[in-house]
Length: 192
Image (cartoon, rainbow, N blue to C red; front, side, top):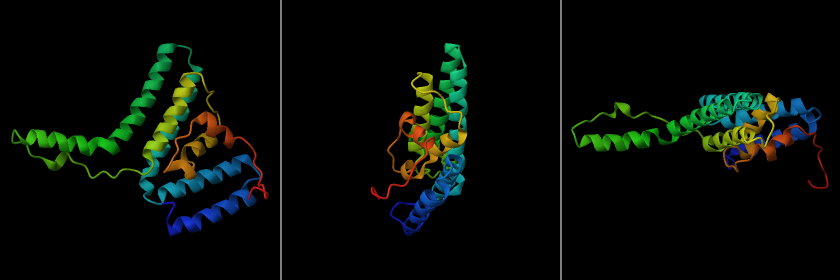
């Protein structure tokens, strides 16, 4: 779903009203609602790409806890490297695989090798760079001890998938955005 679409024009007011006037009484219900609508928003374009954001979320949530619970520096570094390799690997496959294969095939065509079977029909998932770097910033901050890992999986998943910034940014550091999912909020009629 794009911000300038008719679907979003219908989606946002409904989400806004439900958020402020129905589900905002409980932090966990509110976060579950935000996660659900964020997944609907993201999956609207192609639901199959939800698996990428879920994998990234599970990976970095788990690795953040593991890094904080490990006392060995080498093991902490290994866990961070796993996060970097898996997340950046997924990003590179979607973003750069065909580019490098096409360039490789151009180079090898000089020697008579012609095979388009290596080219994959890959569509770039919307917002993959934003949520990849957002989850990586969380794991890196936990590794550097700038941030304690969250034990609240619902808040973490909501932080990663939060629809207003998911596909257009900015990339939010966990220390800035994640604490907002722990707080009770109140609608301010004066500000509205």
